[in-house]
Amino acid sequence: MNQHTPLTAIIVSSVFVNNIILMRFLGLCSFFGVSNRFSSATGMSAATLFVMLMATVATWAVYWLVLVPLNLVFLKIIVFILVISSLVQLVEMFLKRAAPALFNALGIYLPLITTNCAILAVTFLTVEYRFDLGRALLFAGSVGAGYTIAIVMFASVRERLELAPLPNAVKGYGIVFVTAGLMSLAFMGLTGLFGY
Amino acid sequence: MKVIRDALVRGFRENPVLIMMIGLCPVLACSTSANDALGMGIAATFVLLCSNVLVSALRSLIPQEIRIPVFIVIIATFTTVVDYAMQAYAPALSESLGVFVPLIVVNCIILARAESFAYRNGIFASAADALGMGAGFTAAIVTVGLLREALGNGTVFGAALPVETPAVAMVLPPGAFLALGVVVTLVKYIEGKSGRRATVISNLPSACDACGMRAVCVPRAPGGGNAPVAAGAQSAGAGERS
Image (cartoon, rainbow over all chains, first blue to last red; front, side, top):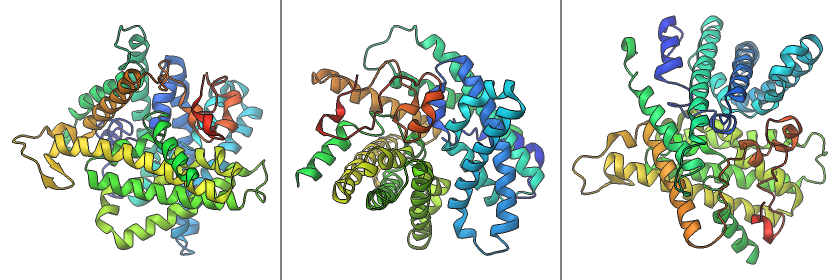
């Protein structure tokens, strides 16, 4: 993808065809960690979507307005992760004061997001694809939507898996990975959708 | 020498990937071939070694309150070094690992070792711990890589196997999940057979339990309240978890 990719291509590709979790393997810690309950899956995905949008705007601005003009692109990794972690802290403090209801819903998930590789990867990919700000936002939103779809579907499956009679060795992560593999197989069927 | 041997044993007994279930993203994404897997294993081990040594050397200077940001900056520095070195000396590998090279910075294993081991132990012990954990990580990712390459491509490290029609799905994304599922199941099965108490906890701890950030977020994290820090490797009895 690049700065001329049509908007529909960005949406279809990042929600389905290159689903961030099932196709790109990013954000797996949170995917496997909080998908054991439907409610925590929805909370986590809302928080991720929110931070993903904010982080993309912030790192996009820092990269193109500060790092590129100053020739400091090699500091990208350090700067991005610091920007994201301070951003998460700020958002947390702001939400606590300004929107306590939203804070109660998202608050517990925010600190988990600082080292979520999905967020960091989206910011890296955004600058690698040289997206303009509009495309960057659309990309982040679509990736977040793809994350939500995957984790919510997976949580629904896992709630039922808890009750399944399984051999001991397969219980736990064994069956969870195989289930994720089958979901990934289903998503692979979307490859080539609308020609993307 | 005992320190090194203990660290190696720990790297396999408490395998970060197959037992503690952390650092999964690179294991799934960079295991399409044994070569890529080995490259990722070595790169991550290098960052782990350097960050462990530096964190351990500076541990009396790093204030308790801001230790996590300091660890992240240290890890990010070495990740940048690896990223640029790989682009210069192994461009093909760098191309096929893609965004996962800079993402070594958020590999939970590295932060977890800095937080739970290097910050509390001497330089030599921390270096040994890094080598042990790095070897455990590399072994896990190469195992998955070998399985996927052999089944999906009919080759091992690029050398052809007598396979007529490889199962292409194994080198595609679904194959990664399936291969890791099979390896994890096998590890658990062998553990059960050998009579050792199964270390894989069946009611799935939250991923936070093994993560280096746990100390920061867990008081408020969902459902992660009472499980012990999985990576607490202070002594020989570190594997004993409830």
